[in-house]
Length: 173
Image (cartoon, rainbow, N blue to C red):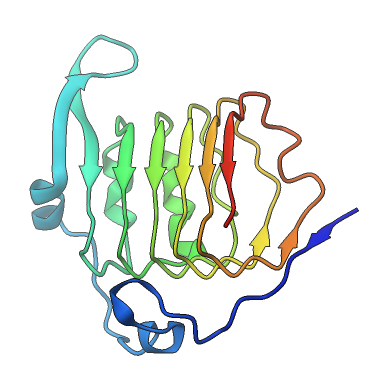
């Protein structure tokens, strides 16, 4: 049995005082460039195989990004923060090329569903303040924390949380 939740007001205020309609007004594309990556990379550490060093964290908050294709060049990233950008679900497909992601923060973007590529080591997924209407089934065996607060969720698939044996905390407000 699927769960239908009451819809929120479509003119609901989003962070930074903008409504959903106002967020969609800036059409120009902002691409994740080498320059932006250089400013956002931090936390140098051992790779998951332990045989070399690499940057493990990308904090690309507040960049108004619409394209993150370049992120696939940083396959050892474990912590990715893409909060306050202009990303939609199709732009997240590139994350499938980063196998070691442990924490993914994608708050306040244009995401309409929880559909993201399967990330084998993902433990925390924070998708607050998006336009999410549908909660798709998750398939991340190590995922222990999901935050979907302040979205427009109206449908939760029955299988959404069945394949999450490590889930400890789920927040949907």
